[in-house]
Length: 384
Image 1: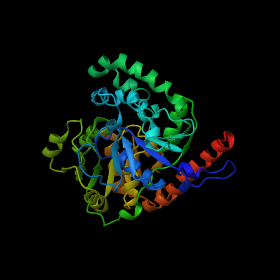
Image 2: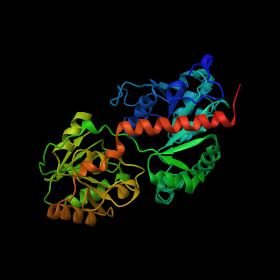
Image 3: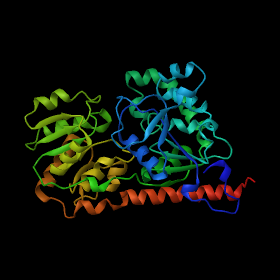
Image 4: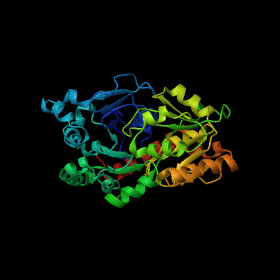
């Protein structure tokens, strides 16, 4: 909304009337968070996402045509670039230094990720945060990480940053959460209510191409994705499994390559991903207490069941025996889930579980949430 055409106090704004800006924390690689923020931008009709640093790898956004703009370019202090090299812990201060009057003094600022919550907005700007999760290394995963060598070294910094993170919470006017799990964490750690707005999935891109008999793991081979337990499970099974995603930090690539029934496909394109999903028998997912976890949704959208860990949002999404089976994250339990699927199959069409993730549903709910809160803000605090 141009400032020359500001609505009068008694008029309700529609989404197209509002000047909206969108900020997303540092883009390390193209992943689920970047997919989501691209769809956020498309839903509210903006073409630029403000971020810290350049996307890495330095390639085009595979999810759309949205431009990612580095706010450090406009910060006067030469230290901003240096600070950005310290990663996300330094981003709180960087985002505080961004003057949003430079970017058209938006009516609404939507931040994505935890560190951009530190922004200091004009008093006429309503600040929404679409929360993927409160920083997990400060809160729900703190005890899982604190006793590693790095965790012991980092404890003093983590304690300081946890206090820093909590202190900036009141700069957010409204929270939107990507799942009930995150809404619970927001209340637990910040005592803030949040509306659940499920991330969108372009369901039309997925197609069931039949069952070629292999299982699929989709995503980086990270420790927190539980990949080692999946590898251990399939080392004792006859079924084939394909791992598609970056090498990550779990160190299991050599074990995968050494096994006759396992294949490492590496990072795959979007088209290759759709193809693998369409041809597999089922998807195996073992992310620990996942905030949302789009992979089980993608599996069902492709007509395939998902063998998901029984915690986080996937544990809520998968209904045992209908659109997949649940396991406890151990190799033994994963093997049992595979055997159960082989013997029993599933009783429902998995595609019937994904309608809540339609892009049209997301766009409608997201737009309505923003305009309702903005109009309430304007009514409560009118500016002539």
